[in-house]
Length: 488
Ligand code: GLN
Image (cartoon, rainbow, N blue to C red; front, side, top):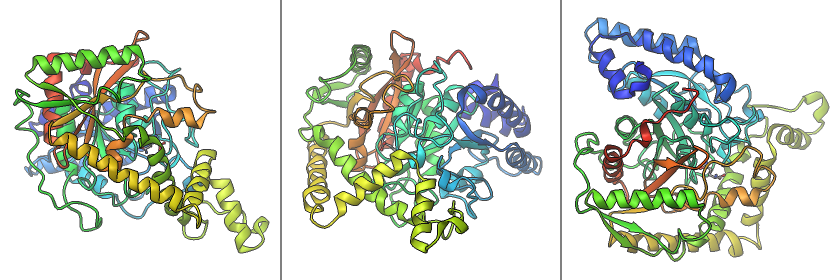
């Protein structure tokens, strides 16, 4: 079925007039409606919006206008990206009825490329979490086994691609929220270089770390999606002016001579044996394909978790101050609220979930007078040391390889009551955000329980092309990416 064939195949079929965008859209809507009750991966499926967009693509084709690079490709976006006229909640009660008056730049670019937006995907509240259990609307489930987490925070976006409801979706990645769910669901997830994709219209969590990026069932589709999303945007001053290379022609060039750094000491501890075996096997495949493995050291990587949870919470406490019940979102019942102060307190108490409150409190604490130097400032200093670690590594290698996660997908409920255990699951992903580098997660095997495992490659600033080329090389030598979960 065409939905399983991926974005490039769908685009080509629509452009050639072999199938209409409307017919593809109907397939995606049918599959989404059938699978979502079990997956809880969509917060909102918008058939009217999708069919309107598909009809517009078909009209343009009939008029002989050029088909866009994603013409007729069904997509879904994480529910923290604004879509004009479509409910956008960040999986929070505080935005339960929020309808944005504008599109995020990433969403507008998908639209301009001819993509057909099926709906908004479930995530942890304000993207804070690693399991999707912090959603106000219940956790999304892993298509490979519904007792397990699809990962987080962009769990819904990973699940809908794994279940082949859509070939491409968008997520945001602040500390691993694209790569970790991609690994857990057996799909490709790419966190671009900080500044590669505009953050305009992304509901901010931690602004110096947040990046928008794609999920796809294969590397070619991920490259196509990034080429649509990337590039400067006058609406986001942190969006880079760096030229975007054509990512597709070099995908098949292979990796002869590529130097792959392996931080052996860092990845030696606390890694599940199945993950270790899949990682080691992947390194062998890279070597067989012509790469050279080089030992590298990232001496400060072991501080990445505390640094991340200081910087991210500090920025979150500031970013989330805007949700006060005055301009938009939930407002506590004014008749019960009393004074203005009480209205603020009640609004935030009713609107935010426990993890978001925990982070606002942590972040406010680490920024407060007397603690700023000991926590926030110290974290920023260690962040600089971490950046130097990576600069030294990239003087000797072209990419750095690690497992994406220390374990296969854990059970829903397994870590839900233990925030520290949950935070530790991000050990391999948070560094790329702290130093702003691009990183990709690629399917690289399965655990004994038949749950997906991912490998992560981190690259030089703005060198997504090398990550994609290495990923494509792995795809030609393995078939992990072609496996589909039982539900699909
Ligand atoms: N799991 C990390 C956190 O809870 C990362 C989340 C993200 O990347 N949005 O903060």
